[in-house]
Structure formats: structure tokens, C-alpha cells
Image (cartoon, rainbow, N blue to C red):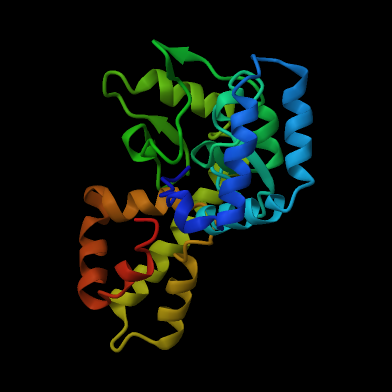
Amino acid sequence: MILVRRPDATGELNRATRTALARRQKTANDFPAHDRRIATAWAAFLRSPARTDVPEALDRCFRFKCAYCESVAAQDIEHFWPKTDYPRRMFDWGNFLRGCKNCNNAKRDYFPLDGGDPVLLDPCQDDPLDYFVWDFETGATSIRPEAGYAERARATRERFRLDQEPLREERRRKVALVLYLLARVVEEDPISDQTKRRLQEEIDGSRPWLGIVRQLWRRPGRKYERLIRAARRKLPEMDGWAADWL
């Protein structure tokens, strides 16, 4: 899981799409929760011209990745606030996420509240680094101990199975490769074009499993702090390569 900075609708959606979403939302505002018209209204949207513009905008924002597990080729339009229970948010651009089938099916209408606030983490509002710590050696996801964070972190981790073994292994492999390339940056003199290219490719925003790499950049810990600092001095442009997700 990684923080996604979603731009305002004005910069991402064309005027016709924004108008269509506003018109549809005005109608949906009259629907009570679990109204039969919710499914009909959403199906009508999926047949409209806006059906193309919205997914394309989400792909640009989420870089074709699932907002929860970071797997690639996510194709579902996920509603953070479920449209069945919250039709007043059904066509709100700020409520749209990109989700994979597994995460979308896992969440469905599960949406516990605590004092009116969501318990599940919103990838566009909540920084996962405030809630999770990833183990660089195993890829495992643990929960930060700070008061007030544990309940939301635990609910999100369990609902989306963010600590399941396949995801652990993907994260472990990802951070191991990035660490190897950073070590090459420090050791080579001059740095080879191949090493630069491979590092740039691996930390491109469209690559999966960057949440753990973001932690490596921001909170490397004692073991890797010196390596990160040395690589930055040697190849300062690498922060620019990662700027859109750092």
C-alpha cells in the first residue's frame, strides 16, 4: 500500500465528464441506502461516454495499480465509501479508487466507522507509513505501535490480506533488487548506464510494490541509512525519478 496523491477532478476529467458526473450525482442524492436504483444508475454510467474518461484518469493517478495491494493491471472502479450504503458519494471523483478484483471483492460493502470516520485506510488520504512498518528482509507487514493507529492499520491489513505470503515475497524481492542496485551505484566509478537505467526502471511510479521502497527512502533505519545517503550523493537524480511517489 502506498500514498496516492489524486489530483482535483478539474485537472483530470474533461468538462463533459465532470458535468455528467455532477448530473448523475444530483439524481443519486435522492436515493436511500440499498435502493434498487443504485445498481441501475451505476450500470447506466458504465454504458455512458464518461465510462472511458474516468478509468483513464484513474489509471493516470494510480499508475494502473490497485490502491490497496499495489498489484498491476487493476481494472475495477472502487468506491472507498461503498455506493450501496452511501449513494450521495456514488459519482464523486474523490471517492473513486482503482482496485484489483481480489481487493474489490474483499471489501465490497465492508466499511466500519468509528465515530463517523472510516476505519479502513484511504490510500489517497492516509499515509501508510504512519500505520505500517515493512520488514526489508522478509517483506512482512507489521503495525506501528502509536496510539490511535493500530485499529485502522489492523482492519485494513486483515481485510485486504496485505500480509499474505505472496505479497510478502513480492515486496521482499522488490526491496532486495533496489538495495542491490543502490549498492552498485555506490560501488561503481563511474556509474554504468546499465545500473542507472535499471534503477530508474525499478523505481518508476508504474512499478508495483513501491510502498516498501518508499519506506526505504524515507525511513531506512540504521542498517541502510548510510547506503541511502551515499547513493543520493553519488546519484542525486534518483530522488527525481521517484518524486511522484515519495
